[in-house]
Image 1 (tube, rainbow, N blue to C red):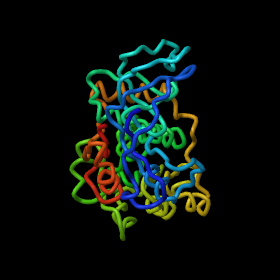
Image 2: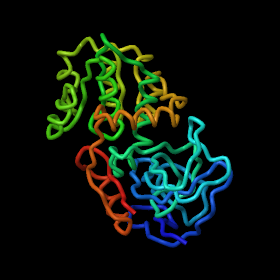
Image 3: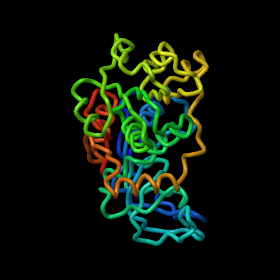
Length: 304
């Protein structure tokens, strides 16, 4: 038996509790991971609150992102590149119910963690990182492009912004004024979000693309400024996508290969993932309260 964050009814963070769960052996193509870090994401809160639907029986586990140490390996367990997984490997990736001491997941859902990538950074990379890669697969940018990123200091927005800068695009990112210095340090031009955004974007009226990582404000600004709808997407404004005729984010790029490439970027110092705060497993409710409130840029991570 091991401990995991659970909830037996929908609601606010205070429905979460720590309980004991079985520790199944990994099956064919699976690995068991001793979790050392589990990043939280908005989808976790949406599932817990009932905003997003789940048919899983109660009590439910929570979380997807993880980093940790492989402690058991099933038959035929290999990484995305075909090499075998071994007990003792340091990994990061995705496993359902990851806010826990131990998780069994597909070997194809994890990649190796280099020693130079801190475990708390690795533990918050999968969903935000691969969503960012998917955004840029949907709306590719490069030299000559000016990209507006809505919510540029959120988990996805930070990765989108840095990857777009690395691709040669000029990136304009919306954020609270207190976070503008962070964006400048990453090569992003900051602008304040909120009323009057279109006016503040006047110097960048040659926008060629929009990726909204927060709501629909950047989408609406892009429409006003004449950005073609096929050069726009968003991750949290599904009704607006349909209303405006904007494409949804494609999913084909959410692969372990791309996760490994992001990991290599972090190891080489070419991608920064700030950590807003870390919490022990017993304080999981406080971690979610922080996630669902205004917090410092970067990831909220639970350290089981």
